[in-house]
Every structure is written in C-alpha cells, then in structure tokens.
Amino acid sequence: MAETVPTIAVLSAPGEGWPPGLESLENAAQLRLADSPEALQAALPEADILLVTDFRTTWLRDAWPRARRLQWIHAASAGVDTILFPELIDSHIPVTNARGIFDAAIAEYVLGLMLAFAKDFPGTLEHQRKHRWRHRDSERIAGRRVLVVGAGSIGRRIGHLARASGMHVEGIASRKRAGDEDFQAIHAAHSLYDLLPDADFVVIAAPLTRSTEGLFGTEAFSRMQPSARLINIGRGPIVETEALVEALQNGRIAGAALDVFEDEPLREEHPLWEMPQVIVSPHMAGDFIGWREALSEQFVENFQRWRRGAPLNNLVKKSR
Image (cartoon, rainbow, N blue to C red; front, top):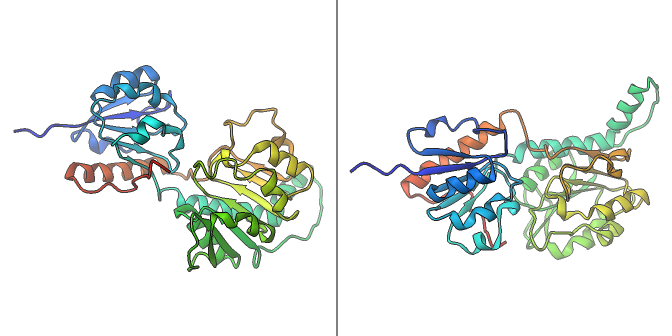
C-alpha cells in the first residue's frame, strides 16, 4: 500500500512566493502556497502541516476553524507571538520555531551596535557627509557592563561575543542560575530594577510574553544610568515607545538602538527617526545573506523527523 503523501501549506506574505530551498520536498509532500487570506482559507482544510514564513501575519486565527487535519505548525522565525492565539494555544497541535538560525547574526549585530555607540560611528558619518574634520575621543567597550535581558539562545550568543570583547556580562532569565562561560551571572527576572543602575548597555533579547510586555517603561528608564544605551532586538512591545522617547528627550538615558517596534513599520513622522542618539533599523538584525535558505533547510530536517515519528526540534511552550 502506497504511503500517504502529506500536504504542506506555506503561509507567505503577498508577493513573496515560495521560500527558496523547499525543492527537496516536491516528491515527499504536496505543497500549497497560501499568500493571501483567501488562499489560506482554501489550503488549510487539506493541510497536515503549516509552514509560516510571514511572522507578522494574523490570518491564521480567522482561518483556524478550517484547520481540520493540521498536525504541526512551524514558524520560520524565532518569535511566535503573532501566530499564537487562545484556540491554538489550547489545541494539541505542536508549534516549532526557527530557534538557532539567527542567533550568531543577531549577536554580531548587537556587538556592532555597541561599538557604533562607543566609537560614535553615527557622528563620524554625519561629519563626513558635511565635510567636517572633527576630532573626538571615543569610548572603550572593554570593561563595560552589559545586561542581557533574556538569557536564551540569542541572549547567550550576545553574551559570548560581548564577554570575548572584554565586557562584563550578566543576564536576566526566568530564574536565577549560576554563571558560566557566557555570563558572569544569571539573575531572576525580579532582579531587573536592581541591576539596571549598573549597566552601561542594556540588551533586550527576550521573547514577548505576558511578563515581558511593557517591561521597559518609565520606571525601568528611571533606574538606568544617564550614560546607558538601550538595544532592543527582541520584540517591540517589550518597550513602551512613548516612555522611551521621553527618556531620550530628557537625557534620562544616553541612546537607543532599536530593530523592533510596538508598531511596524515605524511611521515616517515618528520622532525617533530624527534623534541623533538613536539608531533605527527595520527588523533586520538577524537577516544575513542566505537566511531564507537556512530556514528552509531547518524545516526540511524537522519534516524528515516528523515523517519518521521522531520528536520535533524546537518545540515551543505555547502556554508561555
């Protein structure tokens, strides 16, 4: 008896088309592209697996009643907050993510941002554009204190590079743990306010959860030292944007580098664009050349595990 070929629906943003690297599945599964709400509604009833490549999508919740055969959802992103909703959380359907693909690239990006602040690269480029010869002394990063909020796989790679650069690195996690080769110490989440006054760089690498949403607001910024810089490569809603703008305008903190925002894209008239002490990037910290192929390769490997009945890699704790 011939083996049943599973159906994989690929939830993609309009115009993106097929993710590169899925060609190896052509004989192992039926592939259906869902690049619109209507296409998802049509594909979902026959889908055994859903591959989500558009991490900003909210289409899945509307189409959820049509997910009659679904056995597994894979998000081709590290964060899964946009695709999780109560019905999916309560279901038996496992969700996996792309943990590990972006870790090294994001860590390099964060190290680059810390160097950009310390060496005032934005100021140098601005003087260059205006043909101004302005000598300044710059800061050292060696010996500076870094607090990484979120000591998961991404936070760990950030800590590894920062510590290798001579920085003192401590982490925040859900619970206190002993220090190791990447962190001098790992503190419980409730210690955040006590640690903020000592940090020169505060790096947000945490997922968006009920406990992290709005974590950085007026109170958190009031605890930071005026010379500190905030770097957010985690999730936008972890930072209250209005409180951050106020802290920057009042000199409560020295600067911020933001790759994620409460609302994306950042609107053209937003004051953050014009602040000289702010670096804005369009949610690209982890996007290295070849990342799309790497995501597909990771999914294909997990698909082979699913076919064999082996445990899936990168299972998400949906309730969190």
